[in-house]
Length: 319
Image (cartoon, rainbow, N blue to C red; front, side):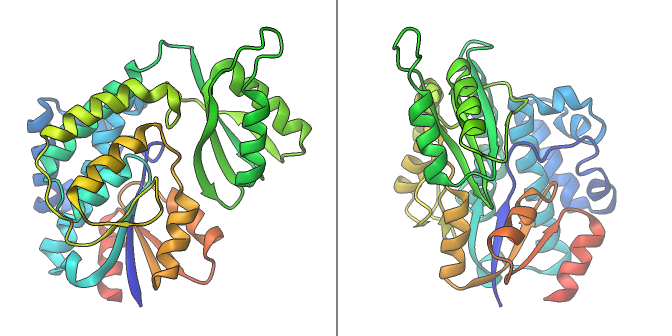
């Protein structure tokens, strides 16, 4: 069986994440301490205890999810003698999870990934004034249909002015997320209902991620990534914006900048990994969101999530 590791994105955070891991394994505690020290914040306390509102803030959720994923990986390595570059064929991560995937593959060290994700979270939050943007999920929509709905909703019928509304995530299994100016997203929701889309609903997010409104955040990341030390990944990453393999640090840097405003092509990423021979997909870190999507996208593949001591033990036994 060819193995792929996937790394979750925002929305997978929950108070209590990593607490059992830290209690059971010194290797996990080391990762959490490293991130706390780098960010000069007790992020681990926020992860273990909440409150949820504070953990959900983009600038906290992004490094927290990376810390959780890397703690699981460090335990696999230390407790199970697991070597990523020997065992895993490909890695991919959903949005911020791409940074976790790259850190897992050795492109970034943990402190660099933590600093970049803190900056990314803050820059994405600051890119638009509060209330300007919105995101919505279109359930039961396919990519072409969602793109057509966005194109129709982009023009304000009263003023004739063009606004931003774009596909932010193509998650597969009929799950599309759109992003842009709040009024344009509202028009797209109405358009989706009129087009017979099963369900169209606003998402409780603090900013319109993965659309053109994030251009200031992309500029901030371009500057930060230029200064960040990067190595070639030991395992190829399948990138969000191209759904293709990337191994050259200069190319990866460019892809991460484009990812801030670009569509997360998750459906295509998974199908590409399947086409490259992967038939076992393991979600590393908090939650099981990607595993759920995986089961819809490639029902014939084996999909599982590991984030607890028991799940780690079961996974190591299965190898």
